[in-house]
Image (tube, rainbow, N blue to C red; front, side, top):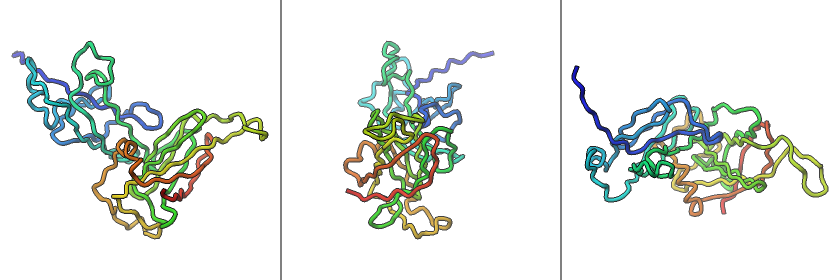
Length: 263
């Protein structure tokens, strides 16, 4: 028997989590990127051994070549079962390999968390507040593909992010809403609804869809596009957006059309 020493430098790892529960996703989804070499480990993380622009660094083990700067890598995540919406994300590599910094956010020992958003066909848990929504622009009655939907609660302060699919349909699901809460003012002592604001953010580079279109035969007008919800959240101040007031209740599951006027 011949022993062969194999040295491999780990650049980082990707951990996929459910955007609603923040729990790891047990299934292995399809994760890809340019010149990205991934290996899934037993903990459910996609471990990164190679990436574009980091070949010299990853192949120099004893005396690694220090990268000139952190490299931004674009990755795509696709769920073949369609329970989660496809998305892209930008990760920064390499991570800090110093074991003394293992507890820091940028450490190679800490996975890069990528949140996955449930599709309109996904299952929901009992007790969640659910809106099976279609996001449209009120003035044009056009659907808003890949819109980012922000559910804003004021007391306590909390923002839940959801995502529409290519048709503008979205599963808005909010966990953790109490069954009853103290009433305000001179009304009921206890109420089973909470007031929220639904903010809809739309990237104007995308093509909207007429509400009169036959979706069963319509081709995706933005074919090839993958949303980056994190990027939409960062850039939302420069994108089209509108909001409306809404009431949510734990365990309520309803369908609704969300018509917003962009400001």
